Image (cartoon, rainbow, N blue to C red; front, side, top):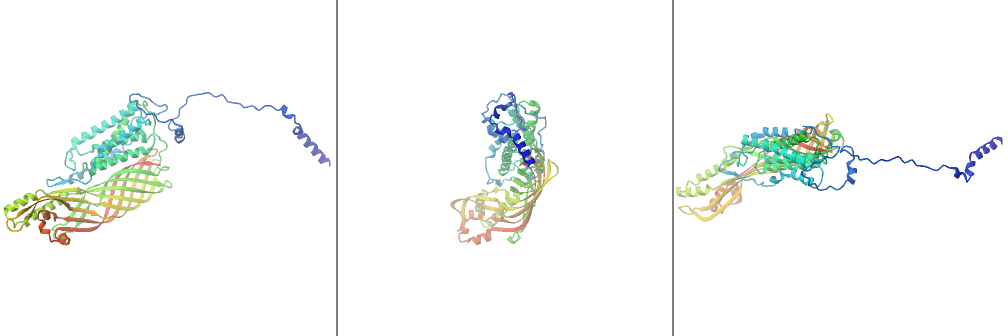
Length: 552
């Protein structure tokens, strides 16, 4: 009982204030201390903020026409001379020199012409895609690396260096174009111009804003080079060297202006960040290279009464690819590749010589005619022309598979892949063209019918079937900026194909003497005036080249 009373008294004393309703009158008022605030002007560097958050509240771009007004944004870092050089154009230029031997493979002759089916003038415009994109973005108010004076100086310097390089080499080397038009083929001026523009877009917006600007620029520049080859205006060696000179000239133009302008006229710095092939192995790339490997097809033609077999040899290929892979970790990923490889035939002269042997045989077959009739017919036969409409055996290939990355350091890595895909071939063809008067032999002398003819047909074609293919390869990657890297690679592909040649010389007789074919069936014509031969061959292909890649 004593203990209970003691506990009760203690509890009452402790909580007495809780029963005093006037107790709140003695409480101190709640106060809030507000720190003194001072307005100051601050700035943010390109590397110190989260652009995805800040750009949400950024003002709309304003059109910029201040061509001669210099301005510099605060906290932009000056570039050192040669600080931004990659020299990625050097191996491309050297690859062009290595591939120059192919130019001696085609000799234009009087009795055949090269009129390929692929004809486009788009490459005359795509060579200016880079500067057009830069100027358009600049006028729209999208800030790039430089203000107008510095941009124009860098572009002018790059194009000036390129023009000096290209024209000096052109007029010194005096290489004949594949179409035989002029002796200024190597290097390709269109391709060099396109790659200077691509480097301009890469420097101004690819490095400072989004790598996809760079992909667009170098992608269009690569397409320009390919079109120059397909248009029969340049050899692959011209295009490779032109691309190398264009990239090197563009980088030198910026390096010289970095020395002259220092920090003046800079609006944005590169998004350098951490360049690492360990944390960013996933990539999308555009590449160009030289295709080597199996380069001959031997067709046995003795069953058709030929004294010699038909041996076709091919030159180095032009290979252009778009490739990408997603990596689950720094070592393993999945991806795919789209590649176009165009392989020109070596020595059309052998085929056209064969065609003119057919004309000579036709003369011999007409030896029964008198001299006056024969001269008349020969005059008509001499109007024949052999037109090369497709001088490339072109392969379109789509591949999928596993990709592997082996980091050597933060910036260097070895790569490999195992691919399976589909190969689709497009034929090459030599067409014959014949025009004149029809003749018929009723009695002596041989007389023209009075009917004119103008005909063209597939005289000689080479085609390959569509098949599965397997591939692998090795590459060396150098990550020189955040999201950007250069690769040198050697790819290997193998496929087993059926190649077919079709040879139709009957048109030489049919045009002049259609009456001889009146009662002839298609099978009889095929047996007497055509030859077709197919062979199976395992084709091994190596592609040596370089890639421009963005990493993500």
